[in-house]
Amino acid sequence: MSVFSLAAAPQAVNLLDAGSLLGAFGALGIAVVLFAETGLLVGFFLPGDSLLFTAGLLCVSGTHGPVQLSLPQVLIAALAGALLGAQAGYWIGRRGGRALLARSRAKRLHEGAARAEELLGRYGHARAIVLARFVPVVRTVLNPLAGALNVPAGLFTLWQVVGGAVWTVGLVLAGYALGSSVPNVDRYLLPIVAVVVVISLIPLAAELLRSRGRRTAEGDNS
Image 1 (tube, rainbow, N blue to C red):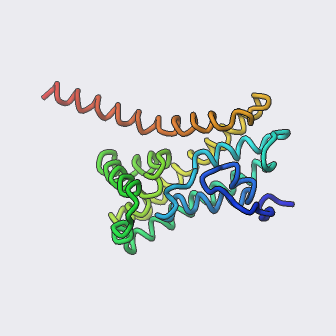
Image 2 (cartoon, helix red, strand yellow; image 1 turned 60 degrees about the horizontal axis):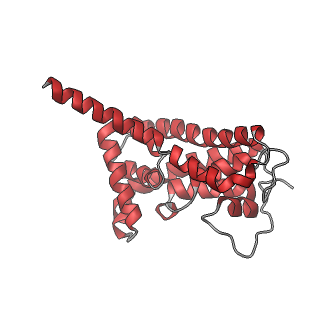
Image 3 (tube, one colour; image 1 turned 180 degrees about the vertical axis):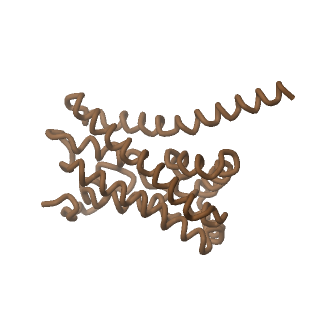
């Protein structure tokens, strides 16, 4: 049976657990979750980073997991969900993203919106769109926010494709490479996923440090 076909779902699927989602829905679940996380404001709580990395692990033959996945199908599903989701989020923003955000009572969502707007203002559109892919919640909010702020559609599309491809393919292949090189690595899945989430914040931290260094240098020269 193709992993794009819905498996017999358990009675209760934990939406915050990558293994549970993949065991229930296979590669199709990856596409749906990434579409919701990157395109719909209600998807800010979904586990994009851990889902991609875990999916890569489960593509390794012999891994003891909830399901055996196909690497080409996982990559296709991940790219489709992330790229289509971001584009949908952008057009939602064009048609009233600010109003939708204002109606939400989720504190994390509003914090993510503030960080997304800061990224756009500090780093410019292209760099912010790419960086946002690696920051949970921010990658949910930045796409509709870019639409609401009238970021040019062509520019947004180009850089969301670049960022989405690096994010999805990078994390899936990282999981696959680790699973291929370390026997029984799936036994240590939870701590590995925690490390992945921390690593996903490194690009933003590096940019913040570089920006602070430039401001310090400019202040010394003034």
